[in-house]
Length: 107
Image (cartoon, rainbow, N blue to C red; front, top):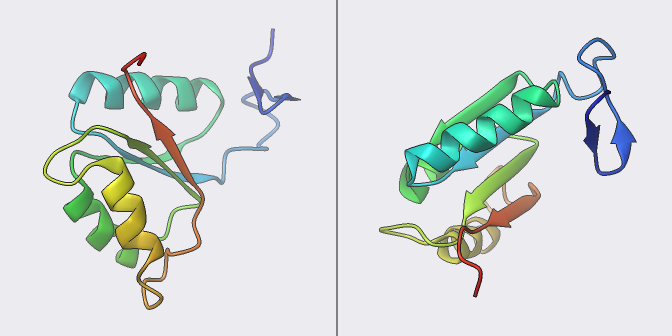
């Protein structure tokens, strides 16, 4: 069975997601590896993962991703703070990149 992404059936051979560049920002190594595994299963090959928002803000200036997946609860800057810093800087080249926020907390 082929994996799906947003309701679209994908296979590793169709190349639909192969050119997508994804940035994962999470201070938890296990979550970064889990998210990477899910994305690779969808056929995404251009994945960068970083452990904090400060480094991610700087890295996004050099390599603009197509989407950012970030943890809501990180230190020293949490995911909401990271998103605010990115969105509030009109000079940042990645200010309009879609951000998906994830969390391991149920509440």
